[in-house]
Image (tube, rainbow, N blue to C red; front, side, top):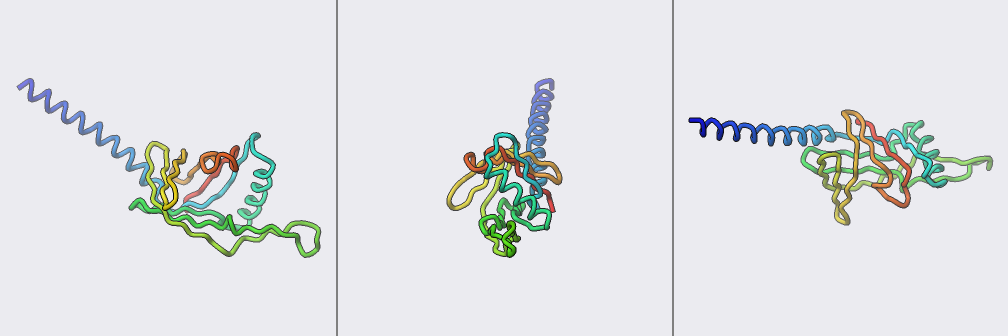
Length: 163
């Protein structure tokens, strides 16, 4: 009887520990499902001058409600990225006294698959697999620029809000 009780206790304990891990992972997966729009870019002292200039442009366009970058994570592990970043154009204004920066109309759409475990977001498309370290809350997703591109975005932090 004692052996049966110990065996039962072991099985129950293993079941709860596996169940807890699964629930934690599912909770993380559930939190990311939805649509996320870039809401802010932070830069630190290691950021390049080009990155500071880009942040100024992004801040300006975000203040005009220009949706530059959006991720939609579906529950089935697929995702869609909508980006206007490659279509950004900076030109001289008509008076010749400053810059004119308009929200791009063209949107690049890319499909991929995703997987999230313990703060590591793996995104896989036809050309590559990328692992990003993210911080995820119910309404905020943060990623370091160096994880996106170590050369271009070192010193930047991208912050997305759930919409």
